[in-house]
Image 1 (cartoon, rainbow, N blue to C red):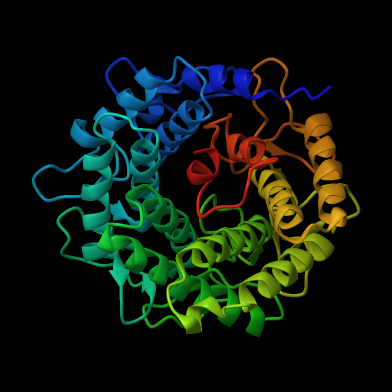
Image 2: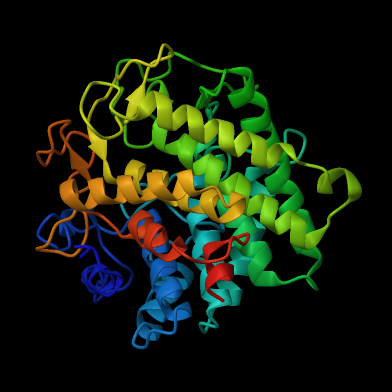
Length: 399
């Protein structure tokens, strides 16, 4: 019997509720870490998770979705005067990564029929389209100051990956009658084509993550800080799984939408997803002789940060399950079963109902990159994707 249960995971996640609004970062004991204040990515991801819970038909989650929507709409993270959302109550920068998750929260709340969800989605999309989306490049820029006057020279693939996830979810939430839907799916296609069909394919399925303002790769970026939680040096194994899965969600959305004959023929989405997945699986698994996936590899496939991150395994399982559903190939299902069993044996924490976020290669709880068990986003999605149809978003599959 699996140790991990969705209902227990949701009960764990509910402990993040802050009386003053929003959700907090959870520690290993399942208690909020008050010293961290409110962080927009946490509030948005938890709101998304509770929206997904509501879409499963489970009762009792409406209040938490409302609580998250209200925090994002009128709480201290929201800049009502200048627009957008601060990274946290202690950091007033405005980042694409953060805003992608606000779009996702708004999309899932809208799909779930939560009060205020559509207003949040409309505002978040407006900020995303006008401040972050660079139509000339087909990609999103990275980070602004609080007043939208200074744009960072850094460009990153991580924020763009979550931008694809968010815009696909937004398109599903808006529905086919909204003129923005086709535009959002076109944007997701353009970004995925540049990242996966471009840089990943050209790099023999080793995806660069960091770029200059002109989108020139920076292969040595953060070599001195390789375990960075959002911008690590080298090849991030979990992101390759995540991109493979998102390519399949995009393919499903395009198949249903039929944007144009040329885009209908984007057969590379399935081929690239399978090849990117295969590279991550073959190069990543037990790369240092221990079972599991290291956080990062160098450009010669040697482990850089050997710690095991729960989210990497969750994304590997989710990608394998999605490929199994799309292709009917049982080998993907076998990999998903094997990897999930590894997660249950190593990562699952019976005391909280969640998973430890970071382990050593030998399986001991670690905290070099992630301290505590911050949120339930990756694990909840891995659970919910199992046995569901592949759609543009997790919320649409549940609906």
